[in-house]
Length: 510
Length: 102
Image (cartoon, rainbow over all chains, first blue to last red; front, side, top):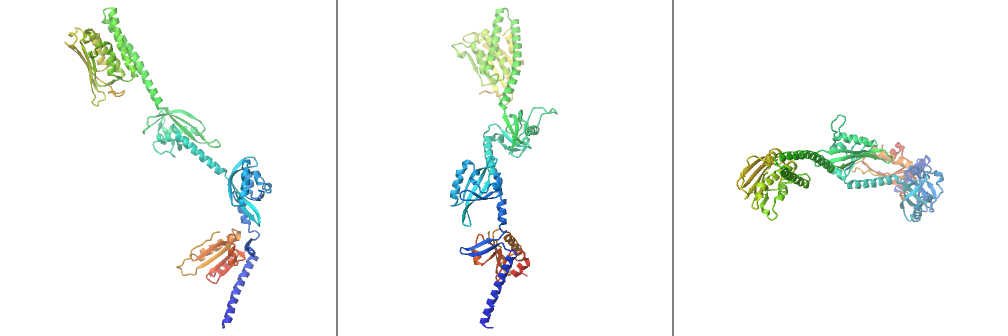
């Protein structure tokens, strides 16, 4: 076969293939299997969509959740999808042909005009407010872009309703605001859901909780106890109280001022007023509760102290009356006439009064032994000789119930000394000294010596007077201690020993 | 519309198919054509085909290069001979024959 014939046969095969392609294409067009044709024109190839092929686009635009419009450069609506009409609450038919700007909030109309002016140069987007048919507003994000249609200049507008977005922003801002308030609150505040699980809490509450408590039930996070008796007569547990109060609050009831105390942990023993109220949603439904714990520990301590003090006062008044009665009787028995009774009785009452002064100064708490001795012996000090009476010993704080008996003992010893002993002369000396055998014991031993010197020669009395009886009785029964009286020739020595109770606080002062 | 492609399996030794599908956006027949050709390629040419889908709305100049007159059109560049098929490619027998797959 010649080359010429082969070339002709090749061209023929190529033409045959092209003819088949062309026939297939025409057949496909005729059978409706294509939806676009490419037409070669003076401006290059253009794709022409066949009838029906635009349907997907139309559906896309119609069913999108954004409003989609085509507007003329002056803002006239040429086309709107149904969604935008729904957003405005108007009939679609009433929308086309109107000015889009009439649906803008008045404050945004000038901005929309500016958008129309600049959109030809490129897309522009703004947040604006639209007015619905019912005059309510909705915030929207509006995008405007140039849209050339067959040589006619138009603009495409996409309107996105951002009500939910705005609401989310508002909720977020409110959350931040609430959180900042919670953090600043000095009282513990706890927010719970309907099941009593903690969703939020103030910093003060976080510090009270035993462990991280978000998502934990209120009663488990805070080990609360109350002294209030339940129906079974026993104290309510934490879970009971929390459960009960949360239920009440979620029902919409406000619970105020249940006294609770915190058990265990570093904050154990603290007292609180437990109050709770419903946490309401936008539609006023209780979706949880807000619990406030008000620290009333100082108040409770004060109340307890007051209760103890009142009991103590009651006890003391009765005791004092008994002591006064006893002193009066004994003094009367040992007095020869009214004048001596009056003098002795007055001195003893005065000693009691001084003791009360010392107690009052210490607020009816513990009193300093040295102060007590100084007060009782002050009247016996010579103005020009302070060395005649020496009071020496380590600081010791003694409990209120020891103050009155000790002051009476000091008074009796001082009166006796002023009458017959060292304090009756200008040369006499008195030393009141004590030591404290602390040794870590709960009740250390106090050894106190009353030592007189350089006074008149001492003669042991034939019989014990009231003073001696009072000293012996007081030390033995009131102080539960021992007393030893030594009538030395150069001066009386009285040795007292008794245990000092630590119960109300430290024995060693200062 | 972005080109969709699966790299050919060069080590298989079988013929590698280079296919171009020209569509017009997401018109019904274009969508059907994309679905049909992908399904067929995954069934018959797995691992040895490269398919690119070209949107003529986005690149109308490519229509001239391929001398297209309708869409959708599938063009088989390899293996030779070159072959083009017009329509939504729903006639499976014709498409297989056009691609030379028995």
